[in-house]
Length: 299
Image (cartoon, rainbow, N blue to C red; front, side, top):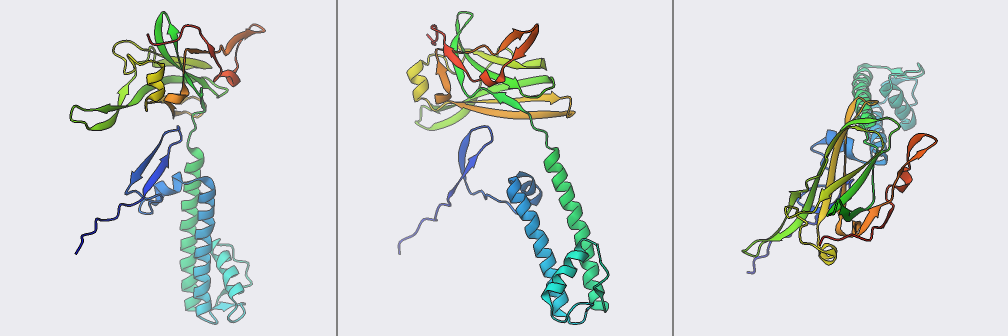
């Protein structure tokens, strides 16, 4: 007999909100063993459909129980699925119009159970909706590209971010890491994160626009790379930041991934901040605009 190797499960592609994509084998798209996390992470259309589906399932199930015992509802037509269904909706909502009512012990028990289920369902859905609406959003704009240019005579990798709120954020902290591929002496290939040291990774006030800089010196993971090396590489730079939004009284988080094809060699960011009518003005529509600097390079 020929032994058959176990079938490898299909890989699940995971798309992050900050642009990085990867795949996992052995994970489920929807983990029903963790319903709370599932309810908070599914898209809004899926969440709303799920709420209506559960509501319909509950009302239909109790309507079937009412139909199963003829005569348990006073004022309802015998065997009428419609009357039982609408009575189920009214009972689940604890409304009760008075035209139909439980007529015996069975009807009272079923309606009492439905009222308890309805109150629990309403409380759970109210809590989930509140949590989904109360999740703070960072409202941080990231330039779509990064640049490598000369800054103070040294080759420098630059990123640009902007505060898209009408209020000033405080306590901004940024971390930059690069995901690079390496091959060991044994020939094993793997990928790992290396920190990119930023000239300034935190500021107390973040009102408008900030340019983040990483000097490419001998200690940088990008040291020795040229334009062709960068283009051929599989590196990905991941920015992660946190800041405090005083209007929300909450700390907000955001992330952004830049791949090799997102990094512009020998370019610089176009100025976005100017003085207009005696007032400092930031044009956030120009946050991703770049122009040749005439002096880019790593050499």
